[in-house]
Length: 337
Image 1 (cartoon, one colour):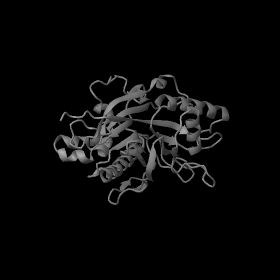
Image 2 (image 1 turned 90 degrees about the vertical axis):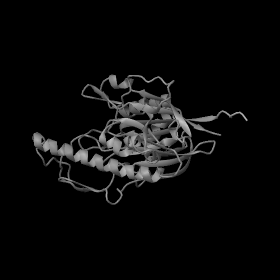
Image 3 (image 1 turned 30 degrees about the vertical axis):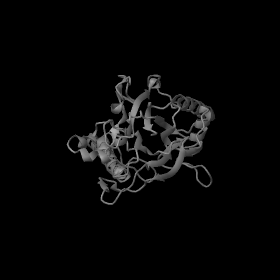
Image 4 (image 1 turned 90 degrees about the horizontal axis):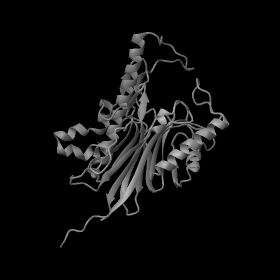
């Protein structure tokens, strides 16, 4: 009998760092003014326009202080998402949004089977940070949603935001500096703290990835702000893509950069960056996919058709109503037969 060509269902996924999305007149950082009502409305309108352009089935976001603000931005998009969640940033009394640091969230129009937020590191992955002590938990807990597509296929989707490269200077209980920030050696030690914290978070996230993928057969997509490039040590701690080169069995628990997995017909533009730092473009915001999207794999269930970067606004000047990160969207396909 002739081979029956496969039928595919499409899945649009997108990620974006929203740059301190918070309700108006709300002090989220001690050294930063809250948004006025006018500023808030401008930020919500701009963010809503981005969401509408992305039109993703699953939207992973970072830097949300207030879940209510995220819902306002979705409302401004004109799109419908039945599931919206930003654990730690809820605004239902007595909760008053995120405190200390913003949170990650997910919105989707797909059916959600399960949702889970990861806070603590697995035992054995705690790292001692000079001057701070043991780093035992994610500053911004990754959020996992297991969604079911219309044809029944389950997909794990995770929103992540790893520690930034910004130097971690020591502060007192009131947030006042207790180190000489002009001392070059102190600055080096502060940068080392950030690196150790991001490395510990990456290793802890790797443990979660392994547990989700090992022998499961359920596709996994990890999206978000990794605060480092795709081939950096910390990103590869999460993905372990390089292990596949000498160990085919490592594919089972590896993650692959969706941009590099695009089909040959995809237009791979030379504008694939999501952030500009001191004039230099870089990719901090990434979409990683599991082996099920790898062509030729025995466990293949689909492919990556296209990855697009929405980053024109990065050249429009600094304005906190806009994000300082680009948005990344991937079009995936999954077989239905």
